[in-house]
Image (cartoon, rainbow, N blue to C red; front, top):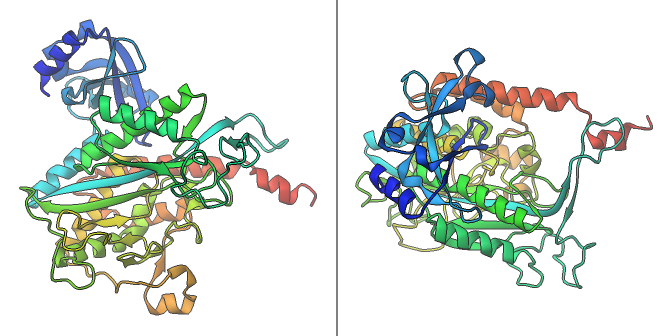
Length: 469
């Protein structure tokens, strides 16, 4: 949809208000609502002078805070739960006609796609965001003197009003109603996503965790569009859950002792005309994976520790990345082995369209524009430098002895955000054809600030263990 079509949309739908939406460096959505009467062709070119960049964490300083939001016309849709209001995703620009803001995350994905195109490829991404839906998230209840804590009561907890139908521990994968009591919320969300926001939904289901965990899958798309869709999916699901008086969260590990929520990311590269899957080779006996596909895996494995800082970007992410919960902690690859960080799905044999790799480390707390682009750059680095991966591993890696893992050259992913940031600082050259140094440095500073803040606050479990020492 071009500018004229977007203006016609505003007129035909009798839109009174337009919600301008953009994403910050941490991946959070922001918005401002403006009257549709302000829109003309020039606005789509010059933007709205409505943004104080110094008030958005990680953007800019107070002495250069005037910034612009430039609406992207082909992202216009109605907001179905509001009256006469449409929304558009925006580019973030510097004021005074200084061009695109270098730390606009969506710009990084766009630059990445251009870089990939110049190498003769295009990419497709199929993320699988998981989430929890809770009755209540209470941030005011804390152990005395411990700072702010939380308690979470799930709509599917065994102590709830279950009528005798409960999800038993770690038996939440695909149960039918009435055990799955969140189907109505998921169905309303996917109906809105498909009818109002242009999604092609492939599946929606309850996930493994005992209480309130779900997953929504949509049809793969190009990198920037797939990242847009993750942001929209989170936005829609949160609003639908709120309508039911519940809270949807993409926090990686909100529940102790049960599965966390990931965002397994399926990724393939094709010829720039979209006709040939560069990662497919029907003659390969193991996984019908081409040499280019192996180089992609080699690049991702080489840079997996640095990628962790972007794809697993919170201190909470590393409470998910522990053995025993289907979350990968080892740098290895396989075709059907979910204990490896990279899997080559083999549901369909001799299917060029389906050939891809699945990177299992990311979670949905990641900024999708940065996470997808970083993954692509790691894979491309493998292609450019012909990086061979280690041998594939078909055993359950969690059950291998440390000596056997060492023999197979299977090494651990970072076990903390701090370690991951150290890796990113020492291994960021592969990103720099697309990621500017200012963005990388600002991102690292923001994340180290989070770590520092967390370190200063006593943990509720410390009260449990140490109150009586």
